[in-house]
Length: 138
Image (cartoon, rainbow, N blue to C red; front, side, top):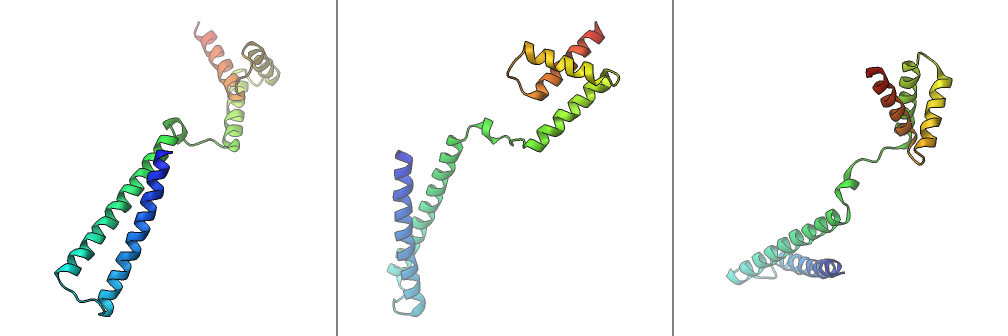
């Protein structure tokens, strides 16, 4: 809540300062306002205020976004097509490891499903492959 107030007030002041700066600069360019030391420092201070508010406001927004999205959410989310490709790749590896015996591969995957319920499909294939590799090394 506090950050939203800071952002709202900062945006309002930034808008007001920008309008005032635009007005002063237009009056200077059109010649309705004399260019002297006072107008120079006034314009310079408006530019500094505008720039500082702009920087602080967007720094605050960036901080807010990084706080709301933890690092685990920064990883790319795999789409369904990539999952399907990895599933079929793992199944093909498993079938190749079993010398083309698809029925045995399906039985082993089903047995892993019963032993470890609720896991993703590719996890079962990896588990069976790891078990086969462990059996081969023993």
